[in-house]
Image (cartoon, rainbow, N blue to C red; front, side, top):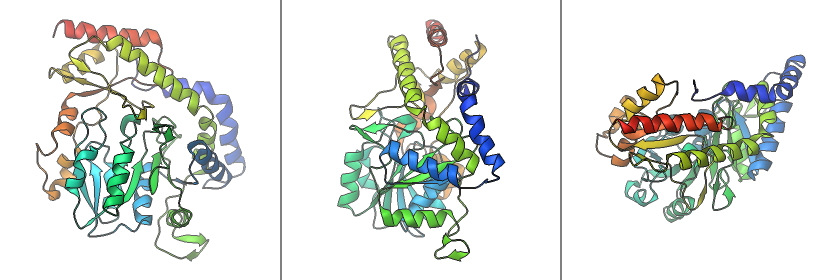
Length: 371
């Protein structure tokens, strides 16, 4: 049996007849950048996520940058970011000329540990970025309290967390601004690069729109500094179709996660994901921890048996070569570092069949029987 880590072909087959006419509309109208498909998707996604303003962008990384840029983050400022996240989170700060300041992750949620945030705050700190990693919301109440206490901006990186909830509220509207990624492998994925930035603040939304489009409200009249961070029309069209399926796919992911939990619950050598009491996890990734230092051996064994897995992420941000100038060293953030050595992402998508999951569980048990 061969089981891919991600099966976008199965998803495409499900929606092919819906999506092709929308792509053809864009081609027939030669309206390739922004325009009707993007604006309609922005409106629809805002409604689904209960956010006042959604601004489509060229990528999730662009959203990370726009959010902090629009909030006025600049050189000599510091932005608190979890050490355990994809590097695009940190680019939001560095592209503004600011310094990323890393904080360790919580041992159960894998999100930024709110109990360790205040120790990282200095007179230069201007913002905290809360990443809803793997599809589970960060501890937003605690982070909101810290941000308010120290007069800091709070930004959500919801790249992996479409339709995720915190205490019954959808992520994306729980801070000053938020960003989303629609990279093809995401729970809501485009057919190329795409993202969004969002806010409930009218004035901030106008600034974000201008930054996205060369600092202009009207063509050729540039009021502020900006960038070309516009979404392509084809991506807006594709996302508009796929948005209609998102709730169904999210329920499917949660069912796959529940099946994994049932199949793998009695294996003492692994730690299963913990769904926090405040969260509705949408399982962009299903990350187990291999506790007996056999993670790489297990991954190779599964590969030999036709099962593809992933590592998210093998090097924490504070140990990335590009951040060597910040002065961090191995041992600074032990929880994040341990996760990079023990974490293993299993295949996770709503089209994953029960017999495939049973085969994965069988092979994991077979491995540990001999290790």
